[in-house]
Each structure stands twice: as C-alpha cells, then as structure tokens.
Length: 219
Image 1 (cartoon, rainbow, N blue to C red):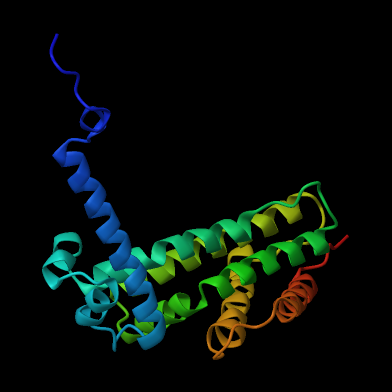
Image 2 (cartoon, rainbow, N blue to C red):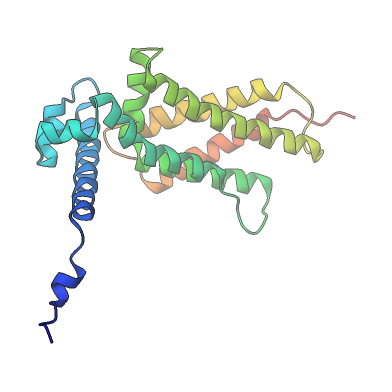
C-alpha cells in the first residue's frame, strides 16, 4: 500500500481559491482604509496614496480592485446607506401609538446616521461640489427612497382616516428635508457625535413637528 497523503495536503485549497480569499481580504483592507481616510480628510483632500498607505498595500493592488478614488468612495458608502434606509423602515413590534412609533423610527434613523455620520457628511459635501456627479446621484437616490417611504406613510394615514387630504408628495419633501437638515447640522457637522439622549431629544422634536404638520381631518 502507498503512503497516505497528509491531512494538511488533503484539505489544502486550490490556488484559485487562495488567490480569491487574498483578493477579498485586500479589498476589505482598502475599503476600511478608505472609510478612515475619507472620514478624516474629506473627499477632496483624500488621495489614493493615503488609502494604500493606511491599507498597507501597493497602488498597483489598489487599481486591481478599484478604477478610481470615486469608485472606492461609493463602495465605502454603501453599508452605511443601506443601514440608514433599513433603520428608518423598521416597524415597531407590537403595534404602538402612532406618535411613539414615529419617535422610534426617527430615533433609529438618527442613531444610524450618527454611526455613519462622517461618511454621510462627506457624501453630502461631495454631492454639492458637482451636481451631475455620481455622488449627487447616490445622494438624491437615497433621499428619494426616504421621501417615497414618507409619502406612502402619509397616504396610509389618510386612508385610515387619521389625517386629511393634501399634496402628500410635497409634504413628504418638506418633512424629509427637515429630517435631513437636522441630521446633517446636529449630528454630521459637530466634531463629536451627540450622546444618545441628545439624539433621542432631536427625534422627539422632529416627531412633534411632523405631527403638527399633518393636515386635519375635515368633516
């Protein structure tokens, strides 16, 4: 009988798999480094050289994964933006008083914004630099999803007989703009993230304004 192969040799992954694993690790290192650099320096002041230095990889490796600084910025943004949209759409369980439910949803949105505040601030500032950039499109798309969700919420309240009729699209734009600006000014811009109780206070104030803005039911 021939000698049995060692267990190490038997489970050794093929070269293509090892290369793919290394590639994924390198890509993650680059994205993590990009998050740190964009958060620290802003978009305009961050260089590819900064990202590769923080990641500990070569510029050649960078361009094997990303074609530009813009491309890695968009990838770095995605997890935070997905979480932001998800947080604002979570339904409370069990069903609750509409005002309390709105406070909870708004607070969840602001908490998620706080956790990703530096990159979200950089996105807004980068979007303002060039109106037809990919950054502007990403920002506007994320904003449109939030506005559309608000519009649908208003329409559902109207169908339930809780509020009167109005231009729900325009009202959703007004309410969404308020949330966006409050988050940017009070959470994104400060040097330090606000404490949880401050975030909750902002959420309560926003919810109060929302409820006062809802059209009354007319007989």
